[in-house]
Image 1 (cartoon, rainbow, N blue to C red):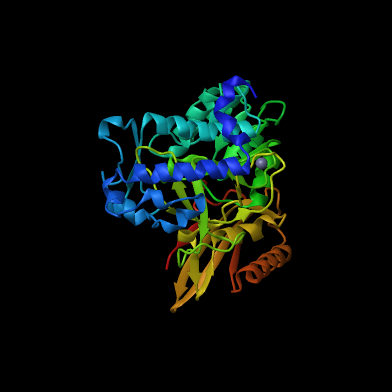
Image 2 (cartoon, protein in one colour):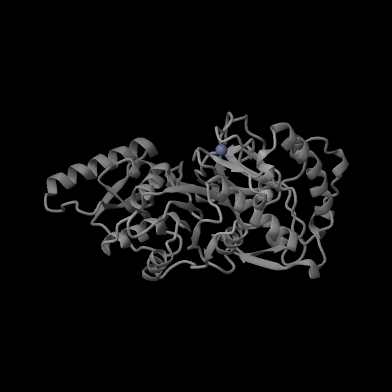
Length: 429
Ligand SMILES: [Zn+2]
């Protein structure tokens, strides 16, 4: 590996080396956390922690703890050492702040850069970062990683599709970072403009983040662009993107375990789930200075993948995020996730890429209507064919969700397209 990329050396560590490093860093992380007013009140003792597994003896930290600690109680360094603040409300509730020292920002950039390097991105690449810049961490998180790798980096931010495509052509962009729903929107725009992938546009890789999506949805994005797209996971409370990213194998996201200690717990009880089972991801930051978090509940539902990855990186892999525990919907006593609907829809060839779940209440009874756009070119002339298709989609959804669902078929591009995160659920109850 080139000296330029020395920061990626940790991706060569053996499993034993990773575990030893985690044990040492966990004690250091707890000692650092104790410098914050919030954790100092909890009376923790770092010396009692002998191995990485002992992390489960520490208390969990929740989003509510962060809210209660606003503005300064999570801060573990003097304010003059803070270089940057990110501030976000997430999807619900009171906004919380996340603080970074110079070292925190450096390690954050390195984590994202390691993930990009694992997908083959180098200083030869021209990187267009199409995520929002500013308080949202998607933009700046990848920006500094692109520069660290030596890529020509274009801080395009999100929106203004025509200008995005113009820059891609002009500069010969090879790598992008983008929301999954927006990736399809931009590809569709390129098609309308008569642009040919591989001839007019030279994209060869993309990084997806910000929205959970299914494997089939990823395949549609890859087909539309003729390029490989990699999943990237992170959350602003733990810096942002780069906590876990896919390698070239595209089979699970390697957690950067020298900086983040992951656990999977039962979202209802907070207890660890048996190895390989699905649950809520809990993360402990091992190297953060300004705002260390111990056992932070991410609300994201996933599981560890078993076995070694063929790429040779021994950092454990997470399955793609199945949804957020916050996203869980309850209809007539049945729990389900919007991702389950997407998985069904994306498996049906006639279905396009946009859909929306509308929940209503009629005469005290909850009801789900799924609005589904069909693929461009689908004829809406033959009612019998449409009815047959609608019934088939409704039946497949019923089989997955175990309750009756109404399906409304729409012509392509009838649902509103957001240049930010896609709106997939409208709850009118
Ligand atoms: Zn791998």
